[in-house]
Length: 85
Image 1 (cartoon, rainbow, N blue to C red):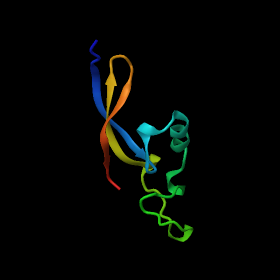
Image 2: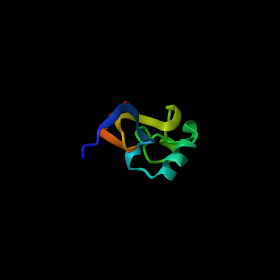
Image 3: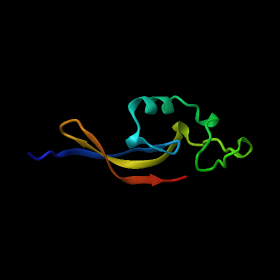
Image 4: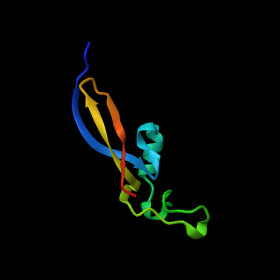
């Protein structure tokens, strides 16, 4: 049996430096509720609280990635995220 893709679209690849495709739904909801201006950027912060840089991207979205929506309802991440730190 062949399963066909219905559509390929771009969506969130990483949130606050975490790969969205590998996160459980609860963690995605938790990250989605954070205030990005009060959350350290994992790429621009350097360990100590004196050198932390807060996230500047609304929603903490670090990158985009292609996702395939399948006719049977599955969604699958394609390729690696496109990063724009």
